[in-house]
Every structure is written in C-alpha cells, then in structure tokens.
Image (cartoon, rainbow, N blue to C red; front, side, top):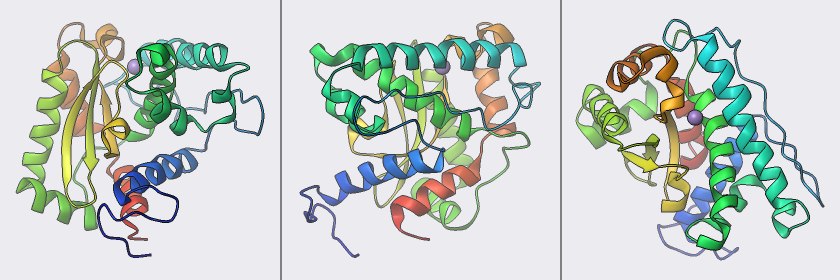
Length: 243
Ligand code: MN
C-alpha cells in the first residue's frame, strides 16, 4: 500500500496517524501483547524479556525488582481499577492512551495506561550485551537525520539528561526522519503523532538505587551497554513497511 503523507486512508486516519496507530499495535504484538479480549479487559503484566539480574552491573537486580515488580505492576493495577466497567475496558492499550491524552478528566487513566505501555517498551529497548551501533536501514536513516550515529547517541543522551524531573527520552520516526525527543511524566511520542523506536526511562526510580543523583552516568552506561538497536530496527521495519 502506497500512501502519501497526510493522504487519508480508508479508515479516516491520515498516514501519520495510521503509522502511529499501526506502530503502537504492532509494537504491542511484537512485545507479546497484553491480555485483551472483548468485553471487560484486564491487562496483565508481560514477563520481562530477560532475568532480573541480566542487565547488571548497569542496572541491578534490586532496581529491576522494584521497577518491574512494584512500579510497572502498580501502573498496570491502577489502570485495571480505573477502567473497570468503562468503555476503555474494551479497547487496546494504545487506543486508551491516544483517547485519553490531553484531557484533564481522563488524566489518571492516561497516566497509568501510558506508563504501563512505556515500561513494556522500555524493557524491550534494553538487552544484555546491547549497545554498539545500529545497522541496516536504521543506520542509514540515522546518518541522514543526524549526520552520524555518534551525533544521534549524543542527542539521545542529551534528551535523557536534560529532561527536567520525571520523564522519558525517545528515539522516534516521523515517516521520513529519525528524531530524538524527551517527554514529561507519562507522555509518549504516540500522542505527538510520532512512532517510538527506543526509549530510556529517566524517572529517578529507574536509577536512584544504583546511581543516586548521577543520571548522566546511568544514561551513558545504558546507551553504551544496553540499548537494543535490533528492537529499534524491528519497530522501524514495521512502521516504514521495510519488511
Ligand atoms: Mn519507570
């Protein structure tokens, strides 16, 4: 299917919206999905894609235990309680996020839905023995967008270090270029019409037990040793239709 940017496709989405929704849905599938059935959905916590000590010494098993077992699970439990017996309980997680974004009345649902999604995406953005450089089409696009892979990594690190207070740094794809953005609290590139490719969690709970106030040291270690560029390539392939 060839669709120009902003051209409406049959379901009424613009191409960018379509890509975003598709990316979310496909990432959702790629991540193993959450429990989803017609009627009253109860989302379940996807298993970590590795053991809780697999990212040591960059991220300790103690941090993973709290982060996955308490924080991620907490967002998910809150979400299930908030959407019980509402129309949201019949919707895929990505649709809940886009449907509740920017509305003060649905802020609690948005925050917990987005944090549930963001954390699953984050676990998959990291892997034991990660880091290094991207390859293939992703590398080509990064070089055309930033000038070099190193400049992209610098921009990613800068976004993660300079995000004031809690939030996330993201590698994104807008349909043409690779970009970097930072978001506050639970916010996510999907609500900005962008496709997420990778993320780094810079809430203090992500690093404080291991690095205390040294967020920059944590971010640099994550980028050098844990980033899962294969996951970014898979996400790019899905949204860009490269596969
Ligand atoms: Mn977190």
